[in-house]
Length: 283
Image 1 (spheres, helix red, strand yellow):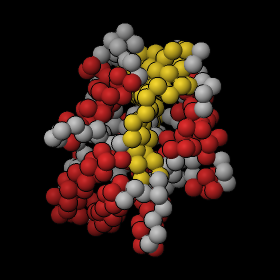
Image 2 (cartoon, helix red, strand yellow):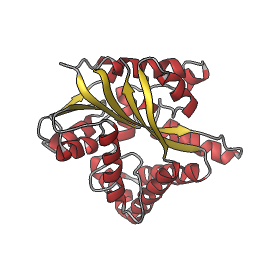
Image 3 (cartoon, helix red, strand yellow):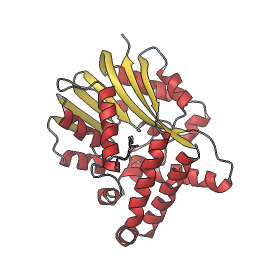
């Protein structure tokens, strides 16, 4: 993975208690999927349901979540039903939280996906907004993005048998803003909050998937959902401003205030998007 363990920990190891203040109660740090008047908690559960069903997980199947975060999807999979669940993450804090859930038949591994070797092939795969850690801005400028993403999809294809399904979700970079301050805000989000990473473009993902090892069964754009998700995160974080400043300092609050407000603008103005795929392994 291009993002190093140290860079990943900058993004996710501020403090589990800090993220608890503004994420949903199950600690999903990815776009929810809203239907009707859902709360954030309901919309995050709905997102997990969609990806569980895209991956065609059942109580008889094993599933691996690549970039498992705090184990939010794994928690859903175990509750809904799976034979076993494996989570892979580079974040020590997230792994500790996920392990503290004590999920039945669930293993959390702190390692790069590129180093992971399954003891036996999985029946299903899920990965939720992890791909942005695979390609740095410098590598994208050098024209390496599609090849890096292709290696990811090809490696994961070796973890399952033909016919297995993959529930995949990714943040996208879309239009480029024209105003200097907007460009600076996006650069701040990339360099300070998520150093070493870059959101892919939709065409790069399509090219990387190709039609050799995976076929695209379904695709859904979730830009509006992520705008609504980040707006709710931002609202909840603002409610705790005094506590955050007192506990973690002014810099943490101000950095995340700038980051989350930029996210809300980015999804509203089509600078950023989000996509979900159902993929099936080709024989």
